[in-house]
Amino acid sequence: MAGRDQLDGVDLKILSELQQDGRIRNNELALRVGVSAPNCLRRLKSLFSRGVIRAVRAVIDERRLGYEVVSFVSIQLGSQAQPVLEAFESSIAAIPRIQQCWRISGDTDYLLRCVAPSVESMRQQLLHFAAMPDVKNVRSFPVLGVAKDVPLPLQDVAAVSA
Image (cartoon, rainbow, N blue to C red):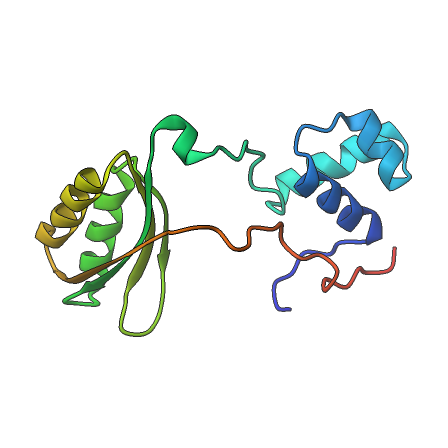
């Protein structure tokens, strides 16, 4: 893999444990991966500073907070000019109910993951997208259920020898 960080077996164990429990205390993490607490903390800081770990977050159930509708939304723009892409990305960055936005290839330019408290609220959001400058096509794919949601697979990442 081009551009991959050099990770050894201990780093991969740390990542695996953190994907299971992001709140694990350093002493417990060190015990589970088989290193001293200071070594574990040093490695953690290194993983953060190198950008391997970008954030540690709570995974929240949207519906428990009143977001009854989760939808993937595909957006096709009328132009691929850099100023158009930048303007679109700037506009959507300001919309809190867009949780994620990916720039993709193919007939669709962007894929968004959006939440809304109701179908009507999502409909209004879709109308807002359609009215944005240079938006050519908007398609919504409401989520009916989650069939799989797992951490990043680490077993396929080859550890470097220390």
